[in-house]
Image (cartoon, rainbow, N blue to C red):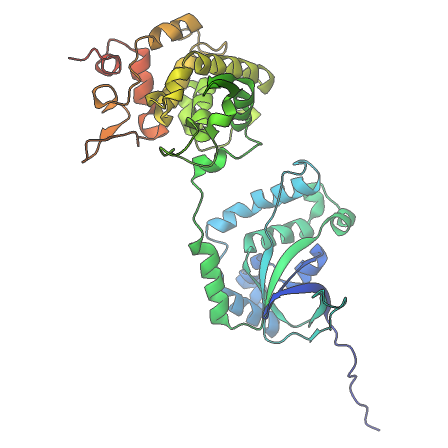
Length: 410
């Protein structure tokens, strides 16, 4: 007797998906499904494991290497932090303010099966991935590796398998049957065509960052008069740009306001935080956020209120390097400033009283600005490059730079 092989429903992993083009679908899957579909990149780069791996697994690793970077690059260093971030999100530590992008997968070859629409005209279908299918992450592999690390030892992240099963769904997009060349092109497009956000601008969006939170608090707290009406100062702070143009209605950027805040907190050392997170553990010794927040809010608010006309004119006071220098000066009025450097706020105002804020070379060229070929003054000097010179000029009126910004240099 000869038996025929079964020809019913194909075996494999079923996924509920929706097409968004003829060769690609989107959906969500459990973490257990992800680790079954996509092998750990760590294992695929381990020569000891590959030596004893099956032919299928070695072929998968070889195919992956044609469309992905190795973990020995910078992305490998990001994996532990990414895993902690994901675990923190699952545990509720970030509230609703966390997100991971959909993982971009490539299914090489034909799928085992694709059902008809589950609901007429909805597009929803069941896609079956064969157990030996070649599925590779062509974008989001750092995240994929982080998920593998969490799944391998959830207890190390404060999680359990039950929680991962109940609380996690991973969004994905899956490209079906495209060639390796097309997969490589998608990798290229995703990683090269996008424009990186400047780090100091990205920092101004981070609500877990103490300095950014204080910037928004100050923007809400201060009321200023402009165009005949009183408005929150925050409406005049641009959060989306590094530099303002003449057409912008705002008077200062959020990244510049943040530079003022970090140098008020740390003094001259604050320039290193212009593009780095400020956590409570970073604060000056014997202080905490409950003390630092109100003091910085009061000092910065007082400075902005008393000099708002210069902000409204978008004079030199709004340049990031100048804001950083002003923060170094304000730091002298904080309770945690070194006693030898501490001054009262009245001294701050006295040192600022005769500063010439006009955007003119006579006052700011060589301090934090240059004159271009057209003769126009350019405040392109960054916080780290020029903030220290501005601070020195503000704090020391009798030096050459101190006299220059006060119009006394002859």
